[in-house]
Image (tube, rainbow, N blue to C red; front, side, top):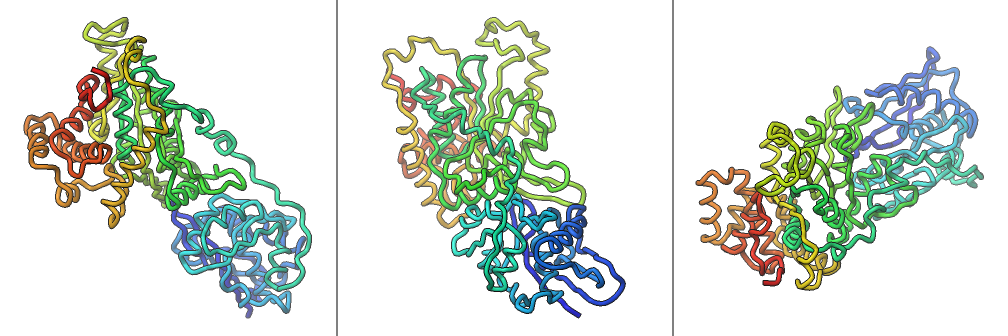
Length: 532
């Protein structure tokens, strides 16, 4: 009886699990069996691997019984990236080469899809797989050649980029590596070739006239990671201000960049040869997008949606009331928990979704309603009521900042202070985030918006006068318990932005104004920088 084990990786969400690909080649009824809760793509690997071995570096044990187990057997497995591990385990178990023994596979991880010619093809999710391999003390990995740079982002990992099964066999045996044709790159995803950042690259806050109060609100949102709602008639600048939020966010830390890059790798939208994604991502799905596109899902393997691809960046949902009802309601989990769980049959996956969510809405379907008279709005009151009811209370209560974006007269900014650039604002945002990182250095979260309410109230309470001000709004019914926590978080971000050691009454007043649905014009002029 001949037996060999090669190791590969399985992905559940963004988490990787080491899989032992165990192959037994023995006399008996001629057959090939793949077991271990495998899907159709893995069942088909029998034919791919058999032809790859026959055409590239050996012969399939056609007169023997081949049993392939992917352990642990209770973990669902899908994908074509197990092909390489299965092939080398078969070669080692069948002892076709005296210098390729089962023990030669120890310490290696094998990732890649095989073609019938033995060529290796790229697969999605290489980076999180290699991260998982490193966490389980695997220090060497074979990957398709175009993805070697992606795998090499993991510190301490020895990465061998290969083109074919024959090259893998040669490296394991310590013989001369044969030549092979270049690996055929995977079909480019539209998201991989055109990224949302391309459209907003170069935009600057200095481009906008007026909107001082909105500028201040989005600066606070960026500093603390607070979900924000922008409401106003069409053409008032809601989209323009949202598109410039990435320009005031600092670069990602190395840990954050690894998380974001791994998520893009899982989704298959990471460009070939790309390094770490250092800039915060930006995604703005259209309001006709499905729940699977925004939240994640799809047929077969559960893939992350745009809410997860925007992790540590900005997710902008323009015309939010026009999104499908299931998308609007499903946003509860990422807004509250910073993650999203998708279940498909007996499979489920949890992806991080700690992005800065910015929602934008018109006050009515036509977008012209303004002021007490309604402006030039032609919608009936019934139409406006139906439109607003699409935004349910549980969703709205999870939004920290409410800002009305009002029409700006062109003369408003002519005699005001010089407009700040995104670089100036980004420096303040970075300083505010550094204060939060120091305060939460022993905690699993980084920003005020992620701090649990009970922990915040116990370890970092507001000044007594500030807390009394917030409690008064709670007692008057203007705040819910969830809203109380969010005001406390906002007060801390306002303090961090201003360099105040502990939020007092001024910071609480600003936080309550930002939480109000009619905050425009209620923020102190000294705060937003408007000349008096």
